[in-house]
Length: 63
Image (cartoon, rainbow, N blue to C red):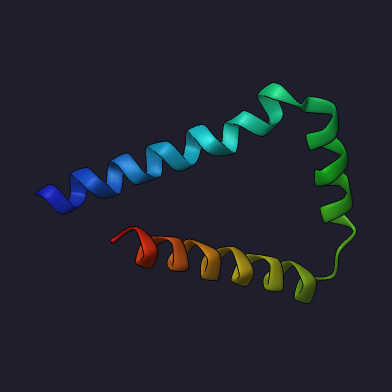
């Protein structure tokens, strides 16, 4: 049960962090999102992979 609690808290924190951009900087967020729409699929996948790698590295460092 503790795993699900931690997972829920991690997802909630991710949503809070994701929401900070459009809330605090809506114009910059809109421009960044527009630029992302122009990227090719392979470029978006690389950005996603990079985010996964950085997240995993942070998890390892924080253990």
